[in-house]
Each structure stands twice: as C-alpha cells, then as structure tokens.
Length: 115
Image 1 (cartoon, rainbow, N blue to C red):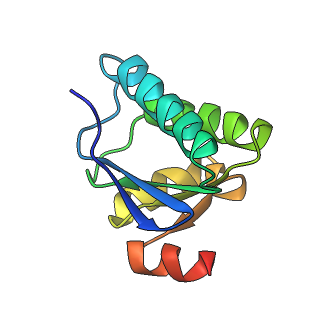
Image 2: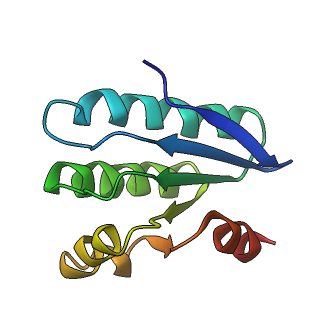
Image 3: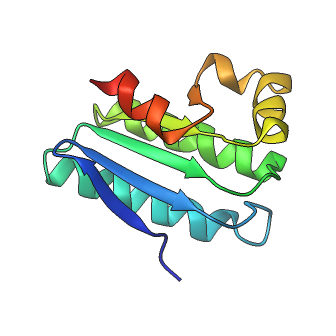
C-alpha cells in the first residue's frame, strides 16, 4: 500500500508513515520514500517531510531514515523528520541519528522551519 503524500507548500511534500518500520516493512517503506524523493525532485519540490506517526521506531526504521537522508543529500532535496512521540525521538537521540536528521516534534514546527 502506498504511503499517503500531500503537498504542504509549493516546494514541500509530506509523506505520512503510519506503520512501524520493522524488518518486514523496511524495504517497502524505503522504496516508497525513495519514490517520493525522486518525485519531489522531478516536481521541483526541494523538501520532503517524513511524518512518523507510530510511536515505535525500530533499528530497521532508523536505517531507512538514514538511507533516505543520504539519498536526499545526493539529489539536493532537504529531508525533515516529524516524530511526535517522545519514544520515537528518544530512539533517534540514543542512536545519534538526530545529529544527522533534522527532527521536529510536530508537523507545524517542521513546516515553520522550512520557511
């Protein structure tokens, strides 16, 4: 099933991830996020926001986010991560991924940071 995507601003795509990114789903979600990054680039959107809606973030999820960040850097698309749940932000902090990913607790804050 494709991830829900909407255009928040002219140059911003928001991709909602409602499910846990675990070993079983990691490849599907990685592929969907890659598709959205390339879509953003093709539509002259320069920012993609990944909205993690599930409170659980596994090591597979962290790996997917870091892979997507690397791709975003290579295609000159800014990547932001929204992690509304404290547990998700804690996992990103404990893995030091928050040093490489631009993490925001709310979508409104991420969109404000873009402007």
